Image (cartoon, rainbow, N blue to C red; front, side):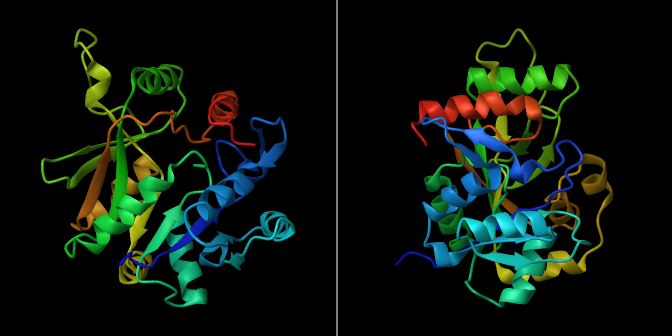
Length: 267
């Protein structure tokens, strides 16, 4: 029997790198503009029923827009420092709606549905982990995208390194591990971390009770709070996906995401 889960999409207006990002419009195969948060909602409801999906926000503009297209909204405090805290705050309002909560971040509309299914199954089977999250082996084009952004001073995505037991060792907004330019197929040693997490409600409550940690604050990566506290994050690895799962981190990412939407014939 499949494990029951719900999806929460945390969304905030005041992104430092891209203010108003959830309402940024992206054009797909038909040329129709749809907001980033609408595309993230569409991705979520392709995975589970619409009544199992909520957008968690503190912004009236985002809440009103989601309500206009028929989505469910849960209002959360402005004091939430990241998406995991916002998911925890949403759960405090909603109650324990499911044994597993999936955080599908609002800037990752290209996330494949099978990634979420594997994260949920992986967490259900692993009592020792507080969270599961995906690591996608880089294609050569995705690796070039990350390296180019890094060379030009932009954060193009997060990478992750993990052990043979798939326990996460570190996440960084730099490209890790360092791969010498002389290595053939060097891109295959780098794994992109997609902004998706599956947690148990108890882990979310525990996370919200912790103070932010030093590495979390330095990197701006919420999952490092779990790692620095000694908790186990289990990585679910994936071979290169047929399309580059680029997240919308900077305005410069829009053309690349729109190209994938057209490639995949997404309206």
